[in-house]
Image 1 (cartoon, rainbow, N blue to C red):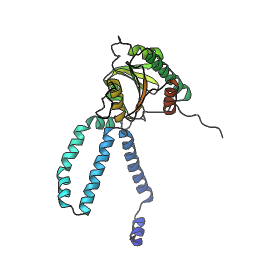
Image 2 (tube, rainbow, N blue to C red):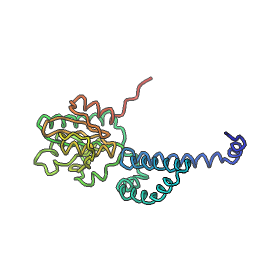
Image 3 (cartoon, rainbow, N blue to C red):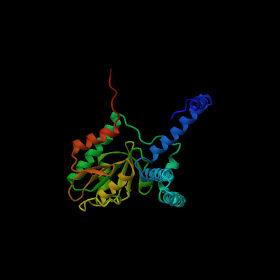
Image 4 (tube, one colour):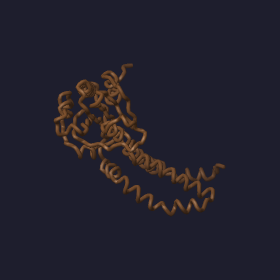
Length: 263
C-alpha cells in the first residue's frame, strides 16, 4: 500500500537540480556501457548474472536457505571467472571509454561508392570462384581483430578487394575489414563459431563469419570458393544465395544515411 506521507517526505528532501543531474548521469553511464558490450559475449554473460541475482533474491524471499547459501558461497568465484573469461571484452570496453562513437551513417554519396565497389568485388569473385571474407564494422569495435592482420588505410575499390583474395596473395586466407567506408585491414583471423547447429557443408570462412557476428554487430560478406555463392552473415545468422541487388540493398539499408524528406 502506498504511503502518502512517505512520498511527501521524499519529495521534500529531493534536490531537483542535483539529484536529477545525478540520476541522469548514472542512466547515461549504464546506457553507454550497454551499447559498448551489445552483441558481444559479455552482454550474454551480463544477462546470465542478472538471472543469478533474480534467483538469489527469490531464494531469500522464499526462504530457500540452502540455495541462498550455495549462490552466496560461489558468488566471489563467479565474479572472478567472469573477469578471466571476458578479459578481452573488458579491456576493449575500458579502451573505448571517452572515445567517440565508432559507427556512423555515411552520406548517400560516400556509402553508395564503397557499397557499390564491395558488391562489384563480391560478384566478380563469385563468378571466378575466389573465396573471400569481407567484414563491415558497425558499433562494436573490431580493433582486436584488426591488430591480428595487416593494417591498411585505403579507399574501397573492386580491384583492391579482389587482389587481396587472389589465391597467391599472402593475406588471402584472412578477412578484409571495412570501417566507415575505408579498408583498414586485411589478412585478419576471425573467431570460429562453437555452435553445433552449423551444417557440416559450411567451410571455415562461413564458420568464422558466424563466429564474429555472434560476438559483434558486424556484417560479413562471404564468397564460397567451392560454389561461388555469396552469403551475408549478421547476428550469427547466415543468408545464402545473395545476388548483387540483394547485397546492395542489405548494405545500403544499414550503412547509408537516409535522405531527409522534404515537408
